[in-house]
Length: 298
Length: 258
Image (cartoon, rainbow over all chains, first blue to last red; front, side, top):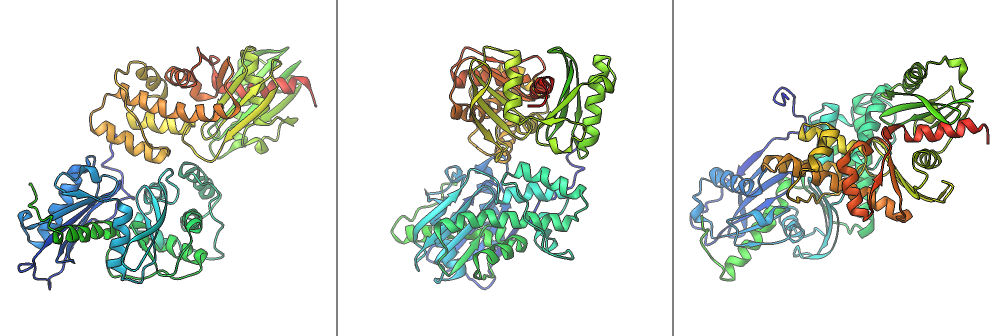
């Protein structure tokens, strides 16, 4: 196999960011949140409850290695030694594999808490669309979870499903959203298959029938939006809707989903993928203040 | 009486030619995007094997998801009936039969004359279908047959937790990266698929004998996993299981219009 030769259309850009204006040297409490997801991993550093840096990487074959890499990337961009971190909380699918975390907290709680920070206290519904699951979370003004629903059984409507589809069509996953609007004529009907495996066969059939890639993308984005909407509908949307996770960056699915929901989603300048890690870092802050201040073992 | 049955599936199109109730020829062609060509290809191959010309066929019946593409047919048999009839032809003792195709799975319970009493279909999810087995074999870099044989040599039970074919593939790649032996991964994959097939079969009720048709029934490892999960002595499979439904359709064709 020469996998190196093949273009990896599913690949998205890894990133790291730090707030140059935030002098953490005098901070009382520095905390870290690490979210190890099935597809991506993030680390967020917070100084006294304010985000000062983050990293967003692809999860590799081993979860603990990915957790370590994410934290190292955030520390590096913040120019901070690991010993400065007072408390770390792990979350996400691979949260049990964050070896340096003092505690683990479920991603449901972390996403609600993180969205409250990233989007502000008006958030009442958090829709997190991750690599392998969709979560619809209802929360109060403090980012506390009041109810949630989740689908983690099926790739339909998830980020991984979108990556597989992008690879099939040979369109970089980060361009899928915009490209899905670049066609002339009426919006095509959604791909009818629920299962991603079937949707792939269906898409190949459509291409053969002369559909443009853009039309197929539109039909698939609509199918994804419908799939997500089916979950959202079960729990109901209270206005103040924040979307987190990688799919929030895909306009093709988001615009179509919002059309179904019939409302607008909230906007943020933050990277939507860091919500879970942000929530974890903020929980770590609370732990730290509660006296659980510990040095990171490594 | 010479009759033919054509099973136009998602992946392959299969034709079986019968003479006086005996199989005298069979042919297969990939369905691809041109079902008409696949029908022609499989029919021509089957006739060549039978040593017959096209005009010698009395009647043709068709089945499978691409049946509407088959212009040459005299009639259509639904997939459940074709499956039941085909499996019962090979195994008159069968009371529970299942047909696993590339993308779909179905099961039926039969009476002592081979007529379906109840049936269940999965066409919503690819987990537990042939495409899933193929994808996993590809990830392991072995053929589907090799994967079956390998699985029988597994010494350690590994579990795949994902329900979805897409997620299971990621899990399998994870297992490969952590150097789990291919035999153990093969067994885990087949156990996972057998679990999905067993779930469809249980919906109609398990009554011995159990027979499986469709391409995946070629995998000895799958039959073994299914046996274990259904808690039956054995799961029967004909030597060329992918032709099972085509045989069923041919038997209906031989009977003439209903």
